[in-house]
Image 1: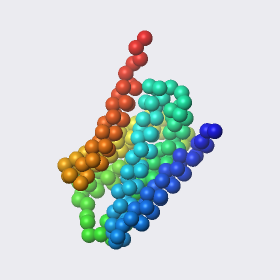
Image 2: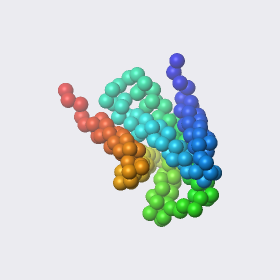
Image 3: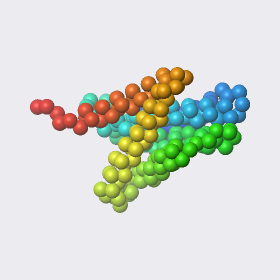
Image 4: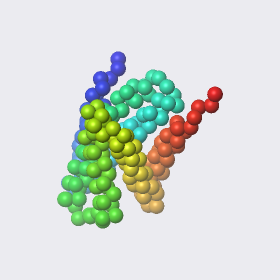
Length: 192
């Protein structure tokens, strides 16, 4: 039985809220809970992002099956990622508001721009916006998805230098680079 097209949006929201609630329940202090909620909502959002990032490449490399279904519903998977990452933003803001940790401009500017791009892509995920924007729609979504990929990649790569976060850094960076590799492989012309 196929999943209705709108379900990926709900799935993204439910996964994000569940990760936030589990994080909140796992912290000793409220600040710890919000920190875990922010961390875990980002981590559960990453696989949804990768699914959106790779949808057309997977369908091109291995046509049919679930890959065709993901490609067909990529818009809703993207909205699901936006919903999940909105929960992440909420958890992160709460952590920064309640705790004494701050973020510098070198983090706030690229991260803030990432959310501007994410919400611009979500707001233009309609047939009407696609028609109205024409070629600019494709530019926005192509540049936007790669910018979000870069943010995730740099975020995970930044964890490689610290022993406590190295495993997460290795896994996240490897997944991000493998996803880029698959996209590049899918762009190569098929051999006859």
